[in-house]
Image (tube, rainbow, N blue to C red; front, side):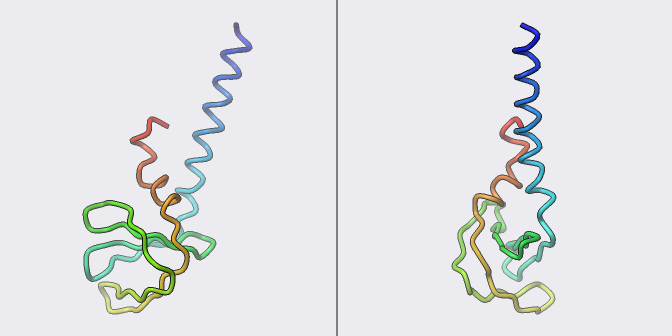
Length: 93
């Protein structure tokens, strides 16, 4: 019985550390003029959250303008990664 509890605890620890790892991988975020936010991961790929807080898909190469007037181009479309980062606490992990 003790082995089963230890195995279950180890599984939970591994699962939660995997979700926490992506949160650490967000290198920077930019607020855009339209109220949405673009997140840049450490590997340079990006994902977008709209002003309502929902993760949205964006085509690679799409030009965006930040609140301060800076222009950035979308690289990647890491919808699933951003969804894991933003909704990590809601899934009970």
